[in-house]
Amino acid sequence: MTVKLAIAGSSGRMGRMLIEASQQTPGVELVAALDRPDSVWLGRDAGDFAGVNTGVAISADVDAAFALADCLIDFTRPEATLLHLEAARRAGKAMVIGTTGFKPEEKQQIAAFAEHIPVVFSANMATGVNAVFKLLEVAAQILNSGYDVEVYEAHHRFKVDAPSGTALRMGEVVAKGLGRDLAECAVYGREGVTGERKPETIGFATVRGGDIVGDHTVTFAALGERVEISHKAGSRMPYASGSMRAALFLQGKRNGLFDMQDVLGLK
Image 1 (cartoon, rainbow, N blue to C red):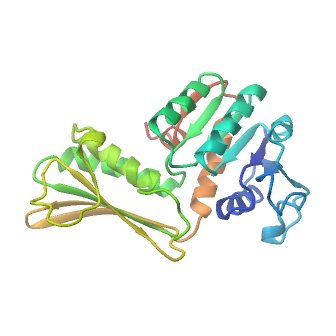
Image 2 (cartoon, rainbow, N blue to C red):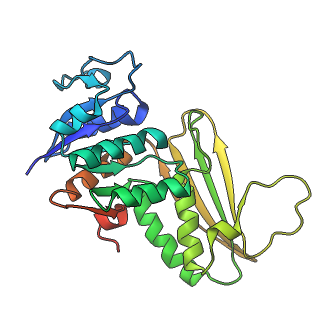
């Protein structure tokens, strides 16, 4: 059975990659492409960015998109994603959410929507990153005493939230494995005379520059040794390909909140 797919933010860097991936994924049919109402790309073919003709014109009408599509993939901004979720609920359709930067109360809204429609919501859609999440879970259980934990992430100059959703999720995974609450032990950047590092903290360092797609490293540092678990993305295609897997995973589901660990069978 083919999944009829709509893609939000289709003129953006990730949107363009999602459109390209949709043309390469068996079992997926692109039927709608969305962009902002003020976009200069409205009415253009969604494949113009990649030099292909998809036969799908870019539109700003989300309700019309859901009339055609089974599932919407959204990597936009929190406020737009929440509006798209409202439309998905009205239509009784599925969503794959790769948007980051949600506040805790907004995540609760997503969970509430998922009581009515099926949703995959993940900090990172790449298969490799989700393998790293699993490795971090194991590492935290083993390296649970005498190791300082630091999370480093780097992204392109255009990214608007920090730390990245992926870095935060890595911190959450490690904190859970160590029996800690990330909200209580996270340290976001250091400056001045900070004093000695408190052993229960998990530190975050953020870099923004150029066209870095996404680098993430978690370091477990002890006296005399250091363990590092890293993922480096060379393009956005791993995120797009994982999103296609998520859309296919939602076929036949009536409701529920899932993440890529569910999609990949890692739970």
